Length: 131
Image 1 (cartoon, rainbow, N blue to C red):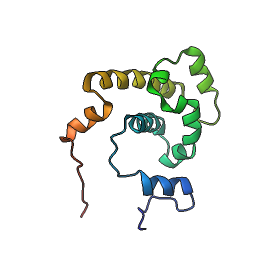
Image 2: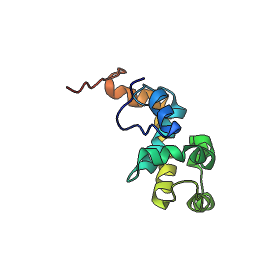
Image 3: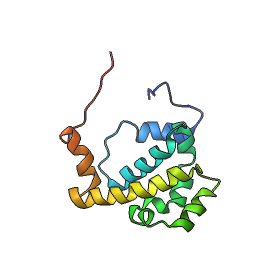
Image 4: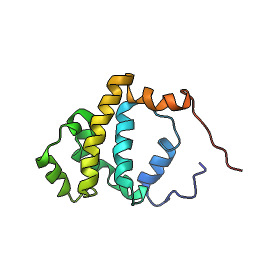
C-alpha cells in the first residue's frame, strides 16, 4: 500500500490510523465525537502523540460517551488533570466538556451531529486533488 509521507512507518497505531481512518468519510456520531475531542487535545501537539494516547483517552473519557462527558464535574476534571496517561491541560479538559454539551445540542436540533456537519458540503465528499 502506498502511504502518505507523514506516516511514521515505525508506529503501528499511526499506520492503522492512516490505512483505516484517515481520509475516509465518517457518518457515525460516536466516531465524530471521539475525533472532535482528540483533535481539540491535539492542538499544539502532533497527531501521532494523540494517537499514542488514544486508548487512554477512551478509558479516561468514558469511551467518548458525549452524555457522560457533558456531565463531568469538578472532581472529574481534577481526575483527568492528574491522569498522566492523557494530555493534562485543564483548558482542553474543560473545552471537551463544553464541546460535549454543544455536540448534544446539535444532535437534538439536526437529528445527528453527522447530519449537521455533512450539511456544509451538501452531504457530498469533497476531494481536493493537488497538482
